[in-house]
Amino acid sequence: MSCHTEQILSLSEIGQHFADQWVLVRLTDVDKYGSPVKGIVVFHSSDRGSLVKCTRQLHQQNPDVETFTFYTGEQIPEGTVVIL
Amino acid sequence: MIIRHTANRIQGHRTYKGVLIVPCRLNHTYRYCFLVDTGATLTVISEQVAHDMGQDIQHPFRYMRIASVHQVIQVPVIRLDSLQVGSRKSDNIEVLVLSLPPDLRVDGLLGVNFLEKFRVTFEFDTSTLILR
Image 1 (tube, chains in turn green, brown):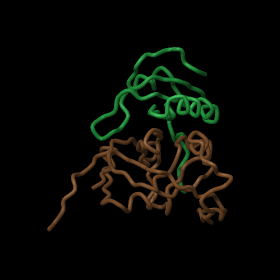
Image 2: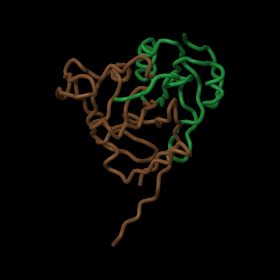
Image 3: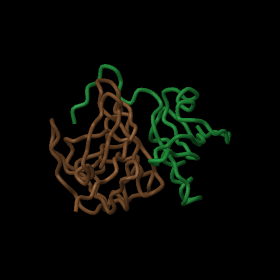
Protein backbone atom coordinates (compact mmCIF):
# COMPACT_ATOMS: atom_id res chain seq x y z
CA MET A 1 0.00 0.00 0.00
CA SER A 2 1.11 3.56 -0.54
CA CYS A 3 2.52 5.61 2.33
CA HIS A 4 1.28 9.11 3.05
CA THR A 5 4.37 10.14 4.95
CA GLU A 6 7.48 12.07 4.11
CA GLN A 7 9.40 10.75 7.09
CA ILE A 8 13.04 10.02 6.36
CA LEU A 9 14.11 6.73 7.91
CA SER A 10 17.32 4.74 8.01
CA LEU A 11 17.22 1.34 6.34
CA SER A 12 17.18 -0.39 9.72
CA GLU A 13 14.27 1.79 10.85
CA ILE A 14 12.43 0.90 7.63
CA GLY A 15 13.02 -2.75 8.44
CA GLN A 16 11.47 -2.28 11.88
CA HIS A 17 8.44 -0.28 10.70
CA PHE A 18 7.69 -2.47 7.66
CA ALA A 19 8.73 -5.93 8.82
CA ASP A 20 8.71 -8.80 6.31
CA GLN A 21 7.55 -6.70 3.38
CA TRP A 22 8.79 -5.44 0.08
CA VAL A 23 9.39 -1.68 0.24
CA LEU A 24 9.89 0.94 -2.44
CA VAL A 25 12.06 3.69 -0.96
CA ARG A 26 12.79 7.11 -2.41
CA LEU A 27 16.43 7.54 -1.44
CA THR A 28 17.58 10.64 0.39
CA ASP A 29 21.04 9.58 1.61
CA VAL A 30 23.81 7.30 0.36
CA ASP A 31 27.25 6.56 1.81
CA LYS A 32 30.60 7.48 0.23
CA TYR A 33 30.44 4.39 -2.00
CA GLY A 34 26.91 5.18 -3.12
CA SER A 35 25.21 2.50 -1.05
CA PRO A 36 21.72 3.38 0.27
CA VAL A 37 21.51 4.74 3.81
CA LYS A 38 18.21 6.61 4.31
CA GLY A 39 15.01 7.30 2.45
CA ILE A 40 11.24 7.73 2.42
CA VAL A 41 9.00 4.70 2.04
CA VAL A 42 6.68 5.28 -0.91
CA PHE A 43 5.00 1.88 -1.11
CA HIS A 44 5.08 -1.38 0.79
CA SER A 45 3.51 -4.78 0.28
CA SER A 46 4.04 -8.46 0.90
CA ASP A 47 3.62 -8.97 -2.86
CA ARG A 48 6.66 -7.96 -4.94
CA GLY A 49 4.60 -7.62 -8.10
CA SER A 50 2.43 -4.91 -6.62
CA LEU A 51 5.40 -2.52 -6.42
CA VAL A 52 5.85 -2.41 -10.19
CA LYS A 53 3.09 0.07 -11.03
CA CYS A 54 4.14 2.52 -8.33
CA THR A 55 7.81 2.27 -9.30
CA ARG A 56 7.05 3.04 -12.93
CA GLN A 57 4.82 5.99 -12.00
CA LEU A 58 7.41 7.42 -9.66
CA HIS A 59 10.19 7.29 -12.26
CA GLN A 60 7.96 8.60 -15.04
CA GLN A 61 6.90 11.57 -12.91
CA ASN A 62 10.46 12.32 -11.82
CA PRO A 63 13.19 10.76 -14.02
CA ASP A 64 15.91 11.86 -11.59
CA VAL A 65 14.41 10.14 -8.56
CA GLU A 66 16.58 7.40 -7.05
CA THR A 67 14.75 4.43 -5.60
CA PHE A 68 15.77 1.38 -3.63
CA THR A 69 13.53 -1.67 -3.61
CA PHE A 70 14.18 -4.44 -1.14
CA TYR A 71 12.64 -7.04 1.15
CA THR A 72 12.91 -6.14 4.82
CA GLY A 73 12.78 -9.68 6.22
CA GLU A 74 14.93 -12.72 5.63
CA GLN A 75 15.73 -12.67 1.91
CA ILE A 76 16.35 -16.38 1.96
CA PRO A 77 14.05 -18.14 4.41
CA GLU A 78 15.58 -20.36 7.06
CA GLY A 79 15.67 -23.91 5.81
CA THR A 80 16.12 -22.90 2.16
CA VAL A 81 19.49 -23.54 0.59
CA VAL A 82 20.33 -21.71 -2.65
CA ILE A 83 21.87 -23.66 -5.51
CA LEU A 84 21.51 -21.71 -8.73
CA MET B 1 53.98 1.35 -14.62
CA ILE B 2 51.76 -0.41 -12.10
CA ILE B 3 48.33 1.11 -11.68
CA ARG B 4 46.86 0.43 -8.27
CA HIS B 5 43.10 0.80 -7.95
CA THR B 6 41.66 1.81 -4.63
CA ALA B 7 39.64 -0.95 -3.04
CA ASN B 8 35.94 -0.30 -3.13
CA ARG B 9 34.35 -1.97 -0.11
CA ILE B 10 30.68 -2.75 -0.56
CA GLN B 11 28.88 -3.51 2.64
CA GLY B 12 26.41 -6.31 2.04
CA HIS B 13 24.75 -8.78 4.32
CA ARG B 14 24.67 -12.53 4.57
CA THR B 15 21.47 -14.50 4.70
CA TYR B 16 20.63 -18.05 5.72
CA LYS B 17 23.68 -20.28 5.24
CA GLY B 18 25.82 -17.33 4.37
CA VAL B 19 25.27 -16.22 0.77
CA LEU B 20 26.24 -12.60 0.22
CA ILE B 21 23.71 -9.97 -0.92
CA VAL B 22 24.74 -6.47 -2.01
CA PRO B 23 22.91 -3.35 -3.23
CA CYS B 24 23.22 -2.71 -6.97
CA ARG B 25 22.32 0.37 -9.01
CA LEU B 26 20.79 -0.08 -12.46
CA ASN B 27 20.54 2.62 -15.13
CA HIS B 28 21.63 5.29 -12.63
CA THR B 29 18.40 5.53 -10.63
CA TYR B 30 17.10 2.06 -9.72
CA ARG B 31 18.62 0.14 -6.81
CA TYR B 32 17.98 -3.45 -5.80
CA CYS B 33 19.50 -6.23 -3.72
CA PHE B 34 21.39 -8.81 -5.77
CA LEU B 35 22.84 -12.11 -4.62
CA VAL B 36 26.52 -12.35 -5.56
CA ASP B 37 26.80 -15.46 -7.72
CA THR B 38 30.19 -16.44 -9.10
CA GLY B 39 28.46 -19.44 -10.70
CA ALA B 40 26.28 -17.29 -12.96
CA THR B 41 27.84 -16.51 -16.34
CA LEU B 42 25.61 -13.50 -16.85
CA THR B 43 24.03 -11.14 -14.38
CA VAL B 44 20.32 -11.75 -13.88
CA ILE B 45 17.45 -9.37 -13.14
CA SER B 46 13.99 -10.49 -12.10
CA GLU B 47 11.01 -9.97 -14.38
CA GLN B 48 9.66 -7.44 -11.88
CA VAL B 49 12.80 -5.34 -12.19
CA ALA B 50 12.48 -5.38 -15.98
CA HIS B 51 8.86 -4.24 -15.60
CA ASP B 52 9.84 -1.58 -13.01
CA MET B 53 12.22 -0.10 -15.57
CA GLY B 54 9.81 -0.37 -18.48
CA GLN B 55 12.07 -2.77 -20.36
CA ASP B 56 10.52 -4.53 -23.36
CA ILE B 57 11.17 -8.20 -22.69
CA GLN B 58 8.83 -9.28 -25.50
CA HIS B 59 11.39 -7.89 -27.93
CA PRO B 60 14.72 -8.53 -26.21
CA PHE B 61 18.21 -7.86 -27.50
CA ARG B 62 18.41 -11.63 -28.03
CA TYR B 63 17.49 -14.93 -26.42
CA MET B 64 19.96 -17.23 -24.76
CA ARG B 65 19.85 -20.81 -23.56
CA ILE B 66 20.75 -21.15 -19.93
CA ALA B 67 21.62 -24.33 -18.12
CA SER B 68 20.87 -24.35 -14.42
CA VAL B 69 21.31 -27.31 -12.13
CA HIS B 70 17.94 -28.81 -13.04
CA GLN B 71 16.85 -27.45 -16.43
CA VAL B 72 17.81 -25.84 -19.70
CA ILE B 73 15.57 -22.98 -20.84
CA GLN B 74 15.55 -20.11 -23.31
CA VAL B 75 15.39 -16.65 -21.70
CA PRO B 76 15.46 -13.06 -22.95
CA VAL B 77 18.65 -11.01 -22.76
CA ILE B 78 18.43 -7.22 -22.53
CA ARG B 79 21.10 -4.57 -22.32
CA LEU B 80 21.23 -2.09 -19.44
CA ASP B 81 22.79 1.35 -19.81
CA SER B 82 24.74 0.73 -16.64
CA LEU B 83 25.16 -1.54 -13.64
CA GLN B 84 26.92 -0.09 -10.63
CA VAL B 85 28.04 -1.71 -7.39
CA GLY B 86 29.53 0.70 -4.90
CA SER B 87 31.30 3.16 -7.15
CA ARG B 88 32.33 0.50 -9.69
CA LYS B 89 30.28 0.69 -12.86
CA SER B 90 29.93 -1.25 -16.08
CA ASP B 91 28.17 0.35 -19.04
CA ASN B 92 26.11 -1.38 -21.73
CA ILE B 93 25.96 -4.63 -19.85
CA GLU B 94 23.86 -7.61 -20.92
CA VAL B 95 21.57 -9.19 -18.35
CA LEU B 96 19.22 -12.16 -18.40
CA VAL B 97 15.61 -11.62 -17.40
CA LEU B 98 14.38 -14.50 -15.28
CA SER B 99 11.44 -15.29 -13.09
CA LEU B 100 13.14 -15.88 -9.76
CA PRO B 101 11.58 -18.22 -7.17
CA PRO B 102 9.26 -16.35 -4.76
CA ASP B 103 11.22 -17.63 -1.78
CA LEU B 104 14.33 -15.94 -3.11
CA ARG B 105 13.53 -12.39 -2.05
CA VAL B 106 16.19 -10.63 -4.06
CA ASP B 107 15.81 -8.89 -7.41
CA GLY B 108 18.79 -10.32 -9.22
CA LEU B 109 22.05 -12.21 -9.33
CA LEU B 110 25.35 -10.41 -9.73
CA GLY B 111 27.17 -12.61 -12.22
CA VAL B 112 30.58 -13.08 -13.76
CA ASN B 113 30.05 -10.67 -16.69
CA PHE B 114 30.17 -7.87 -14.10
CA LEU B 115 32.56 -9.36 -11.53
CA GLU B 116 35.25 -10.27 -14.09
CA LYS B 117 35.93 -6.60 -14.74
CA PHE B 118 37.44 -6.25 -11.28
CA ARG B 119 39.70 -7.99 -8.83
CA VAL B 120 37.13 -9.45 -6.47
CA THR B 121 37.61 -10.33 -2.82
CA PHE B 122 34.97 -11.77 -0.51
CA GLU B 123 35.22 -10.92 3.17
CA PHE B 124 32.59 -13.26 4.50
CA ASP B 125 33.37 -12.45 8.12
CA THR B 126 32.40 -8.78 7.56
CA SER B 127 29.77 -9.41 4.83
CA THR B 128 31.81 -7.28 2.46
CA LEU B 129 32.45 -7.50 -1.26
CA ILE B 130 35.66 -5.78 -2.31
CA LEU B 131 36.13 -4.63 -5.90
CA ARG B 132 39.48 -3.31 -7.09
